Length: 183
Image (cartoon, rainbow, N blue to C red; front, side, top):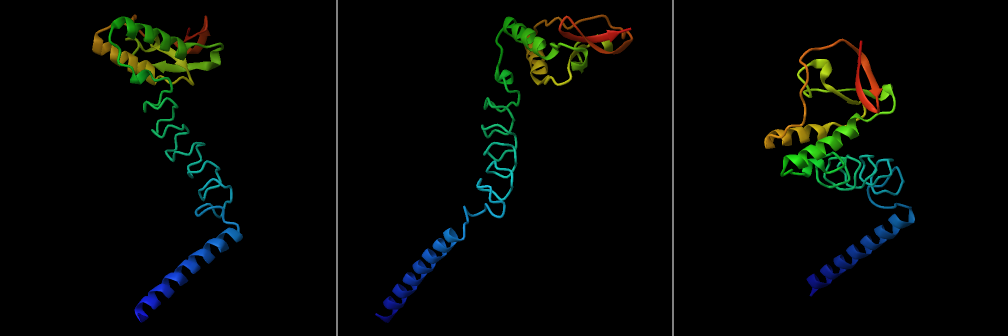
């Protein structure tokens, strides 16, 4: 009987200590464990306000800035990083590949001024200054993925040219398309 009373007393003291600690924590202002010392209320110890400590603006903790949690940085959730889902597409016909290629080429090569141009699309011709040119800020990931899929399907994308390297002095925007500025 004495053992039962000691266990009961120990249990009661433990619960009392837990309750007192919880009340004390609330009274001194802790928002939640791990949020101190920055106090921004996001649940981590960094002052970035995103809730996971990586500062990317989403609460996923993968550091990529999108809310999908797949670590690729695009919000489509397909894990390819391109933002438009093109790499997740498996084209079945050359017509589909050619249409997607034309669309993607227009997107990455379009421009309004010379200063936007300057990314050489390596492998788009057999001559160095005949390679196509894209905007410097363009992501060519989909462009090259579509070329790879076209190759697998043996589709012609019109990537042929003279095999010389005419002299060029930078890049220019001609009819809203990035080009070489030939001398």
